[in-house]
Image (cartoon, rainbow, N blue to C red):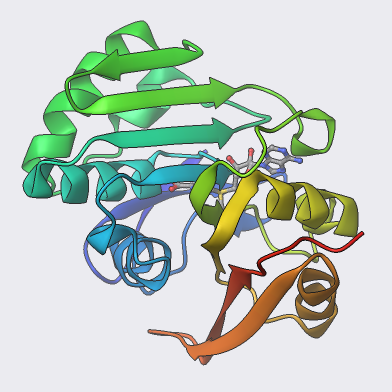
Length: 217
Ligand SMILES: C[S@@+](CC[C@H](N)C(=O)[O-])C[C@H]1O[C@@H](n2cnc3c(N)ncnc32)[C@H](O)[C@@H]1O
């Protein structure tokens, strides 16, 4: 896989199978902070529990961890990843996040493990296709929905997966994603999220779903 620099100076990888990079050209760190961290209000949450679809290069994880470490709150992070990258590929993706990088260096020593923990919190990784995974109920304060685009990687955007993500969310929990696709947004609404179009940074629109009080059905 080819290493590429994004416009904020942080690296990403290009996946030849999907024909897409793991992050937008505008910035890997920029998207992690402005979309996944901030649009889910995770940067303000006193005890964040994050569910991520697509752990990838752990950029979103490290941004959430840096925020938690700076604020002195404990992070709980559950990620689903079908195609874990080798340790050497992850080690090449360094980020200007001093506290999180120290934890990441420790974590890499044991990668790929299913559970990592420390005074900072816990990371659990389910190495499977999200369509096959059983998720905890009413658990997540935030969902980071970050597969490749629906065009090249449709499975994680399916209605059945969105329904599972709703059931795994606490009422009021926020799902964020870069996709603004109409069919996806309608499916998100049917899955029991209030759907908000939000202005993107370096992209016209992103999507935020807020888990309705009672899931449908
Ligand atoms: C855009 S990248 C994620 C970037 C990552 N969030 C980060 O912070 O670096 C998409 C990821 O979704 C994973 N993925 C794609 N389809 C999946 C599926 N059906 N189940 C689980 N993971 C999937 C890919 O293997 C890839 O690692």
